Length: 127
Image (cartoon, rainbow, N blue to C red; front, side, top):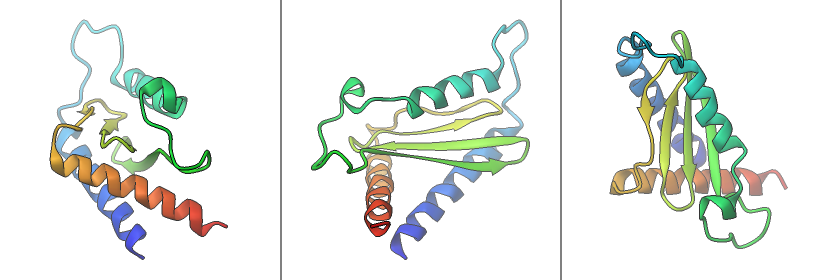
């Protein structure tokens, strides 16, 4: 039940950020790359990431999650929340904008740790 509360909290934070940036996330005049294209690129980088190549230490076992990705629908787009075991967390908005990194902020590190722990808990509960 605690894992569901953590995931719900991330969804609410993501939706709040998406709402805030929704009206500000327009393509800049003269820009050749759309915000949606940038979003897809960032999301694909995360989905194709290899733990060792992004500099994360090994997990206790090969099947233990070292990161978590969650997508949610927002008005006119999608929000993607990413968390890694080193405390890095990012929010990407398909309509443009978001936050990358966040590891230097204690609250972000704790939230990222909780999201990855929730992924570990979900993985263990499937057995």
